[in-house]
Image (cartoon, rainbow, N blue to C red; front, side, top):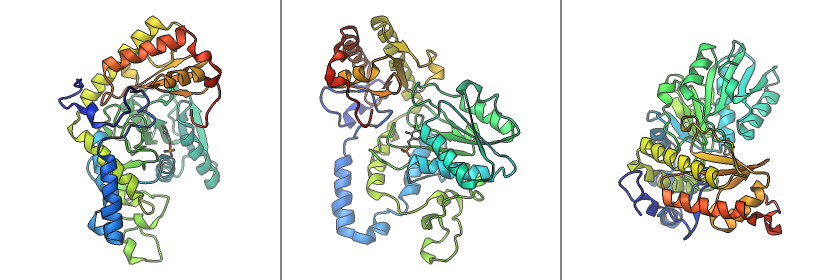
Length: 400
Ligand SMILES: *Cc1c(COP(=O)(O)O)cnc(C)c1O
């Protein structure tokens, strides 16, 4: 069936197992077709055939900038303002350190209780390392704008809540931060490729995100970091690695940051993983984010309507208002872990987040309304007929 998002039958451009309804692209995007062939070429021809000359000949060294531009297009950022590398946790640390340095007299990092724990942990670790009286202030998501005051150095906020899908108004929060004199750091982990983002319009100083979720870069794909053009020449990159140096191959004894976003690079890029990502991002060339958003809202609304009508035991924990929701829908159910295992056993793949949340992601590139309806049929069967009660669904795995 042709997907209605745009003119391409884009569902056919993913290698999804037959019969599986994949509602977890918000956690790990599926494999785009052609990735295996591209990687095979990279391994045998580029690495195997060209050896170290691949860094120049195959463009490995410029890959972080090149792929950064592909991501930039999806988040409303100009060319040359995004680079790729490391993991999201590392990029959070870098952005946060650089942002704190911009407000040396302030001591508060403001975040909210809906943030992903790794972001909070990185802030806590950084505060311990600095040992200068910094404080992480965590407020309820609804209170973020009101909590901006003259003590806040940096607001570090994840736009879309990983558990509930609740989405912050990026422009309003950034404006509140700037009005209070704070620097803004956005985490776009659940936004990039899911909802239209306009970083330039928001005027945020920093943004970070990962590429293995909606961008389909594969497990462990490197993260991205954006720095606003006017400050990119002066920010302190915090992690002073040789590939963020102005002249890495001059091998100087002292660190001098590269001009612009290049300074946010650290060490040698993961070329294999970046090659998979570069291929995956090629899929987006023909995709209009506004259309993706319209389709994801339609699919999510349909899912909510059907589940609520047919499974009264499940309680919606995502915002009902689609304007306040990203591209995922979550329901609370006390036996959510076992229920999700029972769904996965029946080829409907979502995931579970403690303590009781069943999470479903809607990615219109490869999910259509027929999939949503089929998934709800299975959910109805599992929940209403207690199919989750089987012992084999109770043992919690390492990754939920
Ligand atoms: C997925 C996610 C992470 C994961 O960080 P990694 O370093 O890539 O493991 C961090 N923060 C947020 C907000 C996320 O959604």
